[in-house]
Image (cartoon, rainbow, N blue to C red; front, side, top):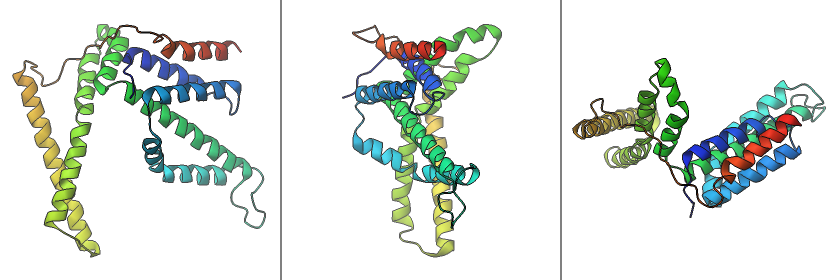
Length: 245
């Protein structure tokens, strides 16, 4: 069971860790220490192997594209002299980029498990609310972002409903005409359902007193408990050591 953390500290730790870890040389001590912090975040978020495996499987074509692009575009020694296409240096660069993408995805999934979307939006308001003094509509922009993030679950429900409706109405189709009809039906039903849902949510917010039809954004503060200071503390120390090394 994952433990909820203050989104303000979580975002700060994410920014510090990513800024250092992505710039550090591969297999350096900073890189390995950053991987250890990511592993600690995965443990705190209680990510399961099944969840991680299914998530990474969706990136399989991106990983393959990285290998192909780097392997072909990077100059160096060819892997096979009889087939001078991919280079050893390019394949190594593609593998490095794929590993960085995997660790970055693990870190992002961990942040999403220990905080809620609205808490993240409130944390962004906590850090950037001073820009409203310059006339920037930070609060309204983040309210729109929070409004969209809370609709992601409904989007998934709408997609599942459209999939079931396609099976009942169209059944098994074959040929290009049937596939195009299936695609048109799915797009139309999904868009109509999302628009109706957004309209109902906006009317509900107006009834509750939000004149613009958007929820107000305020940071959700959680009291410091135990070793919460370690969340941004360890990435901060790593950033300082990397800066002065």
